[in-house]
Image (cartoon, rainbow, N blue to C red; front, side, top):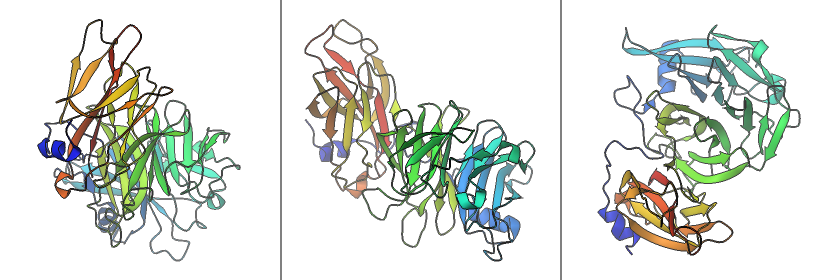
Length: 418
């Protein structure tokens, strides 16, 4: 069995056109870059310095990014906080900015925080509950106006004094919200609180609903294995309110005086027309920047058991990193690491139905006994700078000592190493 150091040395840094959780995704009409300097673009368009860009959402019907920003100047308070629309102008070959003053937030220090798109025509955003009157404000992307007819009540029982992180579940038509270390709260459009679960992402600032996996990503300013990393996201199962275990790190290359990558702002999830899952993130940085990364770890169909990370970020030097297998009926599982993504069906009486190999080559990196349907597979990451950005592909194989088959597989998992 190869050691992590020897195996990583044999893997390639580039794997065709495949993408992994955390991989930078170039934005159309953006010179191949995955990021947009929202602060610079907005400030240039308005001849004003907006250095408090906080939330972000994307209306894919109109190919428009929406950014919430603190009032500028910050005094007097009669200056409105702002919502900006940013869209590519094919005629001028430049980003076009439209300004929308946010009504009724004169007592708010920062204005709207995270934003959420309902998938149709509404952008939601909120602020201090005392400033909004316990409301989530609605902006109509069709009329290009804030429309109080679509505002939503925040539950008075919400533990969050500021409705900061905000996600909209397009399947249940409900919201998830949180404020830094507060509980994560689900509520419906009538203002009824449906769930309140313990915080699972430190210093939560943004949230986005994954409409494919039906999970919620929380984007926060803490909880990474490196203390100066303040752009970290964790995935939550909204049915249970528990972390799935999957973790990403944002772009730490964005400049900031103290924290590489800045600190987490807003978060949104959407799917491109070609099917690519995207996490759209805001970095509060030297110049506030929005950027897009590949937004999914899991791929393929498991025949028995689910593979996820162990709620640790895949940062080089993180000795606590590893994986978890759940919902397995196997007696033991083996962890596989490969350098490329594949899908090879395995047929025969010895294999469970839908068994497939999802990564090649098949390098066995460890094994564990399954107890009560679960197994932990530690994989301490070596602190070798040359491995930063490495594309890794993972899977677990189940070994069955009883029952109608001998072998089964989880789905695959793909992530960059940071």
